[in-house]
Image (cartoon, one colour):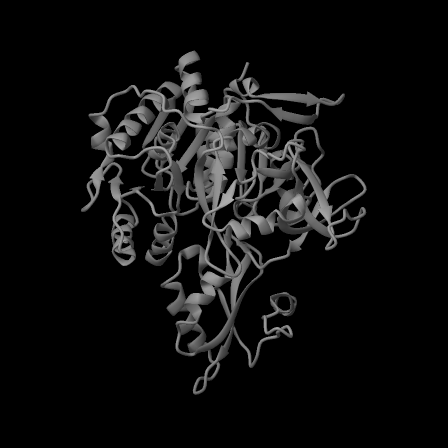
Length: 544
């Protein structure tokens, strides 16, 4: 019996498809103790993590290894004063220390803040100030320690600083500290409703929002792993995501370990389709999940044989039917799309037992009650466009939906208006019960698997002396799904030119994280606006 079965009841229909999943768990449930340590106790040698990098280093960690290393790290953190409720930022790329750190922080009852190494100093300043971090654990690569020190200085804050596998000025070497730490760690009492994780997600009209999940969050990923990714007990699941993004929680630890699957981690900086498929074949990956951008590259470059691969899934943005067809023709595997948000777990998907429909978001997860509702709050008819909403159970507690926005109760109440969770995404349902994405009600840009809020880019654009007014939108792009386009009104004394376009792009992109880079610039005389003066981005997207 896989350990996930201790925490849920699955009801199947006559065809063997999951019809409903109900969770049951103790009020002190903690993934670190009740899943990782429990598996390590029962099957210490069971494979948990297979890791390799571009320098041909590799490590295979058992659940016993994860327990021991997370205990060592927890002891280091505890000795430094990190405890229940303290916020700790992890900027660890795809280093295996991320898994030790995540489990260690869970055991301590601390709040983990995953962050990507691509963040700029200004990005870090905002997150450090907003979250009031007590400690930061980071990679020594990509000048991350230097950026963190600069951000702390600008923020006027201090924090306990650790770096892994290397010495860095101003940072303690966490790897060295772990070598001296005890292998055992006494259980810290936590509650399932305590905050466990804080993600920053892009906002459309302001800086990124802090999304808080509690200790029940990992259990909601049972459906993600088993019925969408179709990861298997004793299998090897590979999700292509850096640990700074919520997709890592979806595919690189929680659900996969709950059902007994090991996770494959390839630590790289620059995406190479050949290297990716070589890893799949070298280690015998059985299930694979990646954003549409990866599949587009694979189809373009040519897909080799991948005999060990049994299942493939994708999420993050729209994927062209042609990519679906070519992938299936080459591999014999049906590519299964899924949909959810940083604020949620998997809401809709082409699940096991379904026949995937090219381009469809799939059907609602049996774990949630999903509806499409119109502007009046009433459910819409088949074929009509409505907003995807989540209706909570009668007891009011919906595991898997975030528990709060950081210091923004008004925004939290707004997305829960009318007693349902509003995703902000528009879709319609066909006669077979499949959902089809129509667009977002807000202006989030999905590019290359990343979510970018236009406000962050617009803020930097306005720093350029030639820019009087600007608007940032996403436009169709054959490889990225969407490319970031800046629409600019110039000030007096400036005239549109190719040279000015390049200057503005270079000015901004030097200050933006790479995934937020402006790819296109258009100069206009004026912006389309509402009566209240708001720029009509929907019209700009139609005209782009």
